[in-house]
Amino acid sequence: MTSPIKPPGGKPPIPPTTPVGQANKGEKGGFSDAIKASEGAEATAASSTDASAAPASGAEAIANRLQSGEIDADTAMEELVQRALQNPSIQGLSADARADVEATLRATIADDPTFARLRKDLDR
Image (cartoon, rainbow, N blue to C red; front, side):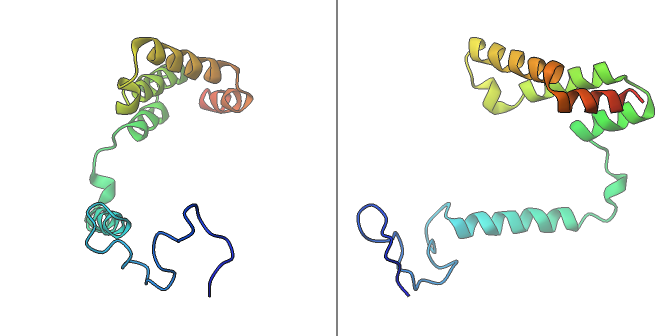
């Protein structure tokens, strides 16, 4: 079945009859390679014998510390902001852009009604 809608250039990038998974066969970094890589990561994660024995990291660790009473909600929010600012895509920005991102994060946490409700729930 063909579609009357044609992409720019008039031809679809692959013939419509090409089976899924065969479109990028042999191309490095293609869709099928990405699927295989994600399946491998899922299999590795699933093969863990006891996931609960693994130490928590990142946001999960912060949440665990908050639940245990080790830190308060203000400290948890600060750690989450600092963690977000350590993201490689943020680190790649100029100093001014990083400052803008930080200001936006802090303003959102302070002013957004959804965050206010979440913050209130954390104090309980």
